[in-house]
Length: 265
Image (cartoon, rainbow, N blue to C red):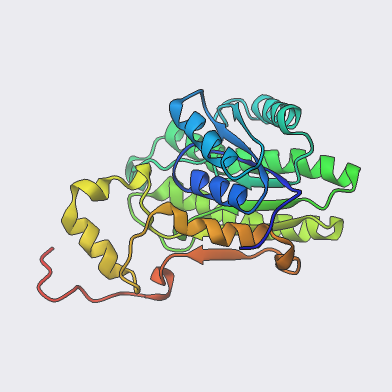
């Protein structure tokens, strides 16, 4: 495992799912971590405790990143640094997806999705980057995208749009911040088992189809994302800038899989 000892990370949206898995992986690699969620919850306490068991410092901050962007970003920046001291790693994971087709999309749903998935990440990164540039800190940013940033689904218009924006944000912020020794990369999970994908538990036929649709035949839990995140944030990835690592079992490489034998739609 690559080491992150001596570093402190803020991981947004890290009480469950991909964010939690990444936060715990960073702690296992030696980083102090700040866990983030919208409100206090037993889940948050559990993640903090699991991180502390790795022998690192762990704290919890709250803030609704779908709220007034400038206010929430400032509060999260101030509170996390007050708890943990200097932070040199930012993982923008907080996000949402709402199953609503394009022809039925309303403005409130679209704006909410973009505000949480894109706008908050953009301006939270700006807040930390300004501080890092002024302080001469070689910061590291990891954006959490999705395979939906490259492959579309007809009922995920707002989500797909937002994750496509995240991928371009990785590239844009890379070329802007690399001269300041700040690295920006992204990690894009394919379908993994999280509370947002729990529909698979109730639809075994859909579950089997998604496994078939993935070349390695797996729909794993979100902990598969941790190792990639640790690598991209480690010293060993010093020359990796502006890249999106897909952790998808090969799904993005398979243009149009045939249905499995005997499969009935």
